[in-house]
Image (cartoon, rainbow, N blue to C red; front, side):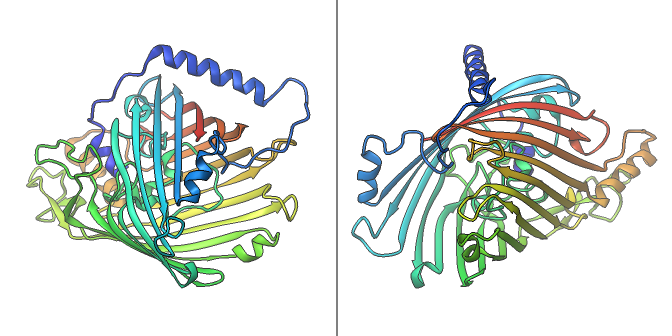
Length: 458
C-alpha cells in the first residue's frame, strides 16, 4: 500500500513464542470442533452481528437505554509463507479495536445525532515485509505497531435518515468502495483496493484524518455519497520519521482527497426475499503533489545518465472505479444463505501511478454446510497491472545499464478461505493465498501463504 511502502521501515515488536504456541494449539483444537469426525445435530447458528458476551450481564442494554453503544473486536492471526517469496517464515500479528457510539435521541438531546469514537491497538510482525515482498499486503491488519486514535466524528441525520452529514476524524475505507455482502478476505486488497492504496496517500486503516462526508438516499434504490478528507494521513517529518504515531498528528498542508460514489441497489426487494444486488460507480481525486513514474523534470528518462534525478511533478492524481455484487442463489426467502458473486475494477493514470489497471472478483457462499448457517466460504482473485511508465522506465534501465532484470508486469492475489462461527461472536478463519509475481515482476518467486485467523466480537 502507498502508506505501508512509506512506513515499513518502522520497527515491529517481536511476538511472544509461548503465546504463539498456545494460540496455535487452541485454534487447531477448534478446527476439530467445527468439523467433527461424525455428523452431529446443531442448534441454529447465531448470525455474525451478535456479540461474544451477549448482553454483558445486562450492562449492554442498560447503556443502550441511555444512548451509549459499545463495541470491541479482537483479531489475531498466524500466517506463514511456506514457499516462494523472499524467504520462508511465519509471523503473528493482532488488532484490537474498541469503540463507543452516543445516540443523541436516546441520551435525551435531539433526534438524528450520533457521536462515534474508536481506537486501535496493533501489534505483531508483518509477513509481507519480512518474508513475501508483495505489493498488496497479505494481511488486512498489517500496520505499524502502537495504540492510536482511529475515529472521532459526529453525524447528523435529516429527512428521516435519508440524508446524513458526518464530520470529524474518519477513515474513507469504512464506507468506500465496499462490497455490502462480501466475504471478509484476509488479503488487504479485498478491503481498500490496491489501485487506490498504492497510488495515493489516503485516509484508510490504520490512519484516519479530518473530513466531511454526505450520504443521500436519493430514491428507494439509489444512494449518493461524497466525501473530502485531509490528503496526508502520515504527516512525515522532513527526516523521514513517521509523525502520526498516535492518530492525532495528521497534516492539512498536502492536498485533499475527494471521493464521489453513486450506488444502485435493490434493498427493498431483497428485504422481501428477492436475491440482492448492488452496483456502484465512483471517482476519486487527490490534489497533492505526485511524481512522474518515468521522466525527470526535463523530460528525460530517470534511467538516462544525463537525468537530473528529480522526477517531473504532477499536481493531482485521479481515478475511476466500479463495484458490483449479486446473489446468484438464495436458499429461501427468509434466509440470508446462498451463493453470491462480487467484482471491482478501476483505473488511474499510469504516468503518476504505480498500478494503472485493477480488477478483482470472486464467489462467496453463506451456510454451505448443513447446520452451520452463519459460516462463509469464499474465493477471491485480485489483479493489478503495473503502469506503462513503470514498465518503460525498467526498459530504459536495461538499455542504459545493460542489466537483464525481469521487467515489471503485474501482481495477482488468489485467496480461498472459510470463516467458521465457533459460538456467538467468535470466529475461526483458515485461509490459503497464492501470490503471483510478488512485487510486480518475476524477480521474486510466486508465494504460497497459509494463515489462521481468529476473531472475537465483544
